[in-house]
Amino acid sequence: MFVLTLVLFVLAQFSSPALAGWLTFAAIVPGLVVSPVAGVLLDRVGPTIAVRIDMIASAVFIAAISFAGWEGWSSPPILFILVMLFSLSGPLGAAGTRTLLPRLVPPNTLDQANALDIAIYAIVDVVGPAMAGVVVTWLGPEAAMAMIAAGYAGAAICLSRVQRLPGLASTQTSFLRQTMEGIQLVSRQPTLRGLAVSYSLYTVTWGVFYVAVPVFVANHYATATDSLVTGILWAATGVAGGVGALFAGHVRTTGRERRVMAAGMLITAFAAWPLAAEFGFCGLAIGLMLAGVMSGPITVSLLTLRQRRTDPQQLGRVMSISISLNIAGFPLGSAIAGTAVTQSLLATFVLAGSASVVAAIATASIPPDTDRRPEVPLL
Image (cartoon, rainbow, N blue to C red; front, side):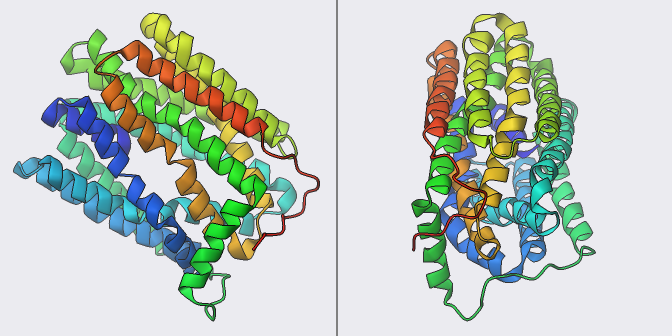
């Protein structure tokens, strides 16, 4: 719910797409900056504790955003501070969940486990935006933020009963050295480096979508219903993503990840432009669902390729840094779209499509695997 609710919150408070884009940027980038440090902490304390830290911190800062909105304190500087603090623990949760799976399933079923995980997450993509649209429409964005904070708090409580999985990294090596090792590993391994570049370009498309779609809907519907329509569109996109992920797990992407990703990115580019941009509201709806279907195989392939090519003792650092780099395109796309959409909505969708075309080219340029064993880090 959070990113969509944040955009709707800012549009309701300040009627500024540009500010919405930059706040989305601020909600992600600080976490990207601290991701190498977060990765070392994850490898040391284990994924269970790392995810719990993220849930508690997120609940606190989102509740503060809600409270500031209700009390009339939600000025842009205060919102920037709160969303930046929210972002700092993000790598622990995002990388912690992806570090957990390879420790629970056999290697030959990893792509199926990733597919099921993404499909389950797609339920959140369906329920979350729909709830955001309904709650913002009926109760206001402050209530939606409070609901998100309660969700994070509930998740933290549930995690208190999950068995603790210990960290695998040595505590004898200095924290700084392990941080630098993680950065070197991602930057020097051809597969990890290529995935960081290509997927970050792909997420530029989704960053543009999250700003452009609410503006598109607002231009076609009354103010009283545009948030609800936006939520329904994202719900349909989430359903499509779950279907795509389950299909990817069924056909098995192992060994074909690069080809699956490149093809999916090209189809996503077509979904953004001309489909979503040139054919009115129906084109937008079909384009979003098509992009959602493609996001499943793309993400399953990304996770499987990265997990099977990484040493388990370094997986926390690799996942934290890689995920942060991968999603770097999202806030960049949102920030650019927040400015571009005020000039031309069509050009904004063209930008989204172009980003996915470049991402497909970058993916195809990743060297193919010569075997299924983890690459030797060039340290």
